[in-house]
Image (cartoon, rainbow, N blue to C red; front, side, top):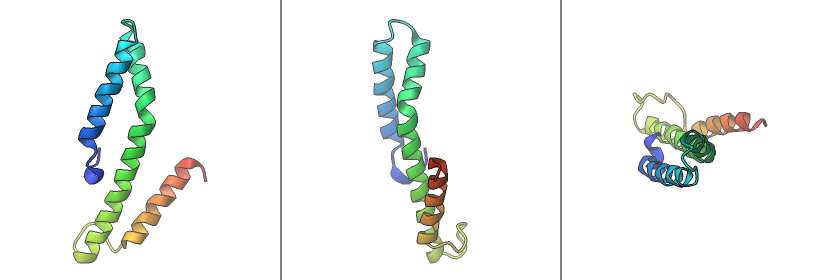
Amino acid sequence: MLQYLAQGACMAVEDAVCLADRMAVSNGDYASAFVAYQNARYLRTGRVQIMARIYGEVYHAAASRANPQHDAGDRTPEQALNRCSGCMASRRGE
């Protein structure tokens, strides 16, 4: 998990609750509980990861304005956000 949304600990707590719930109803079939857990968490954690990536792009683009030696190059925050929006659109099939 990227650090830009400060969601790592939150995701870990959500993961623990979700996995405990799946284990509780699995009747000892832990393999299916893990599959159910993975299916339940996949979209949520993916969405948070994508948003963290977007915030990271914007953050680093803003930092590059203040510090030309920063590794984001010459992107403005707007350019970084547009770049990420394009990636998200292609994942959605637009």
